[in-house]
Length: 140
Image (tube, rainbow, N blue to C red; front, side, top):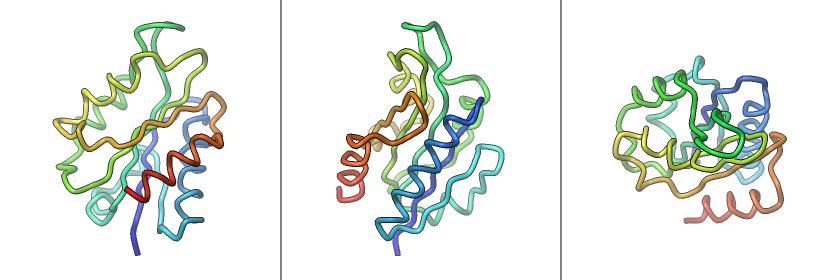
């Protein structure tokens, strides 16, 4: 059985909610999945996962200079080799994501080419479009 690991860094709970909805989507599609905060992360889960999604909330000015916060950046820079994994990113935001995903990819230590999906949500819930993107991601 395929496995998915969803790792989130949440400030208010919205990003956690989105991570849990992504986990539930994978589970409904017969993929064993686990959603954990960056503080609960276990490297062994990463080793055994086929799909790995990293998420955080959008920090920065309301309409420009969006970026992950320092805690997420420090976490992601210590992630071991991600080759062979199907990677995805997700973010929650108030007004816009702007440059958020580009800035998240820069932190992935050379694994940014493996990022096959970028999901965003204002309210922490998956949209119908997000569901279609996830289905396509699973089947790539």
